[in-house]
Image 1: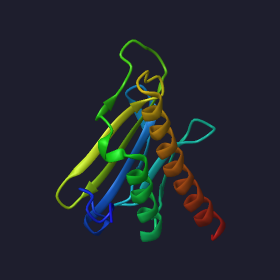
Image 2: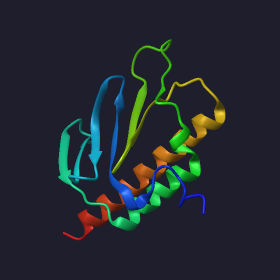
Image 3: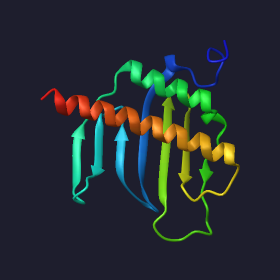
Length: 140
């Protein structure tokens, strides 16, 4: 019942955007609307592929975000005191009437539960993208 009354309904889901990198250099991006996925591989080369997540995978990520309280996360979870190569993540869920975007630094020194929730959601998104990429690579 809680999900049905949530401000972000999956029936109005449009897309998921996920970006990560170091500091302001977010070279790794995924956009579920276009399927565009680019990342820096182990050889420091930029790889661009098209990767489509299924409706079930997107629903899973929507529910995971709801379970972890993503809709209540602050928009900016940065640590301005830390300079240098700090991993940064941007997660954005887009819906028909509204969007929720969170920028999270791995050096964020806020509430431990909030840090844990961010890291768990990031791991889930990365896991789904990695699984779909592997499945797509193996089907060729």
